[in-house]
Length: 224
Image (tube, rainbow, N blue to C red; front, side, top):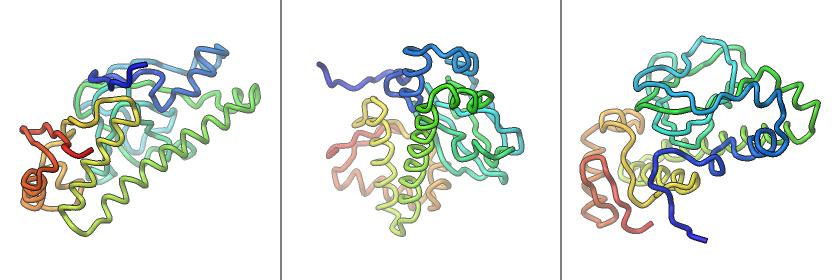
């Protein structure tokens, strides 16, 4: 079987963060309550908000295509989302969103409303396990990003961020040796907590060390 990674921008259902729960309740079991609560392939235009801080928490989300940005209540950039990743998990059991998620490009999402989580969990014991696994994966990805942010050296921070983006793309079945920076350099510097000049020096150093090739926002990893 071919191991070639996808170059498309849309994650496959088998690679998505919802893969296991959809396989069980959409494709195999065809659970009516699950099907009723799952909205697939919703399109959100660039710059539109998927949800905003202070609004009611109603669902879990998976990013199907595109890139989204996470902001806190002060509109400070806190993170990014790539195709396949779940979001809204850390707020699932709170009444209101603490963060806002905005489409950085045109995006598609899958939305799993939490309306009947309890009822579905009473029908089958495995549903709760699926939700726990989704929450755990989301928490792990968040911790990996925090591990990048706490690095004190600017070059190491930029290098680790690029590596993390490549790792995430690989995990969700995408081409990972050639990636496109999902943010402007100003946004990336803000996200990493460094100056734009530090970011520029770090990227130049990675090129000079022959660890990456750069063409505008496109980065090719030479030693992945």
